[in-house]
Length: 465
Image (cartoon, rainbow, N blue to C red; front, side, top):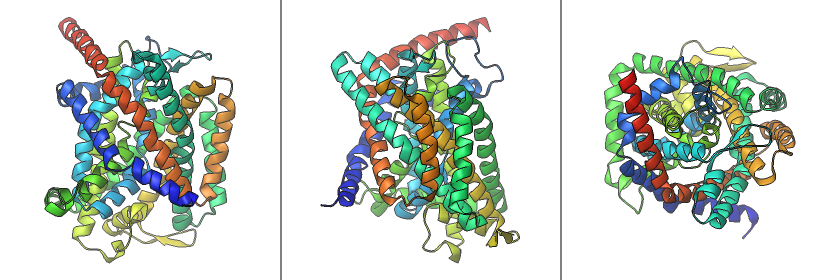
């Protein structure tokens, strides 16, 4: 077996049915233990996240909002454009329903990750907060030897996965989209992306938090509005689109024809890829937040999964389904970002524009612009995740070197051929989840205890309001 075949085999195992069951099963287990808290706490959590009055006095480096935006920067990315389209093609429209299911239970997972990340966070040699699965595994598990091993494993996988899934794959997607739509050489795109990446990440988490606090709301609103315009123009197709999604989710061949059906498998797989619930990445950003209690920031972190999958991915899914119902010929044979671009282009066909000698439609242009911002913000978010994993392994002395390497890889990724890199990074990304999920299951009692304590704080705050 050659190296490429070996990587493909390992990747298929890591992202196989057992991993998907473990990811979804952990979310279900935590949902039950926490009494379906994602339902009744969501309004309060959204209020916390977007309140004008952010906590500026508690320990931490960035605000609730900036921590959420940093996490969303890493999760709202190509998964919302290309990932949904891939699930739609390979799993059918019903895969979108299973993305919703994954997101619902993933909200409990994301909440639990953040609780543990903040409870067991520490202050590094630079005076910044450091937290995440590597720390709560080492400090939280009764067997500290096992915890250390699991923590090192998570940090190793995370530090290297950041270069692939959070960097090269993203800049390559931008370079391809800009070249095909605007006729710009990938070398130029790579250079510009590297400069903009360096300008932000060399300043550390405070700089990243400020940048993502501006970029993420802009890009999310931009993309959502474009999708809502399409839905408004095709309002008569919305109910049939939902009908198609639900009927496809529960037909025999899609849902229960095998050990795990195609709609379920691709819905769960791309749902996790989109919102990263269970991978252990987002709690690294949550640990930097200024907060007086783990439960408060954990609720804010939970909203990330809701916004990413329930809101943004639903927009993409409905647009794809409506375009499919209209049977546009331009959609045939396409998948990934190319399919989403074609769907938006077919449903927003106004004036074919000439840019850089290439003809493009308004819809395709909007998706391309969205992809640029989505991918760039993902690079910023993952630079912090990878840096903190690297710091856990070797300390703070090599952080600047890691940041420089990250910038150089951003340039290289824009011009590289990435099939093998994608599979290696995807494998490492999935491998991160294993120690994280072990920690979540073993420390679920701590999550419940911290939640009860915070509920008492909320009751007292309500009485004194």
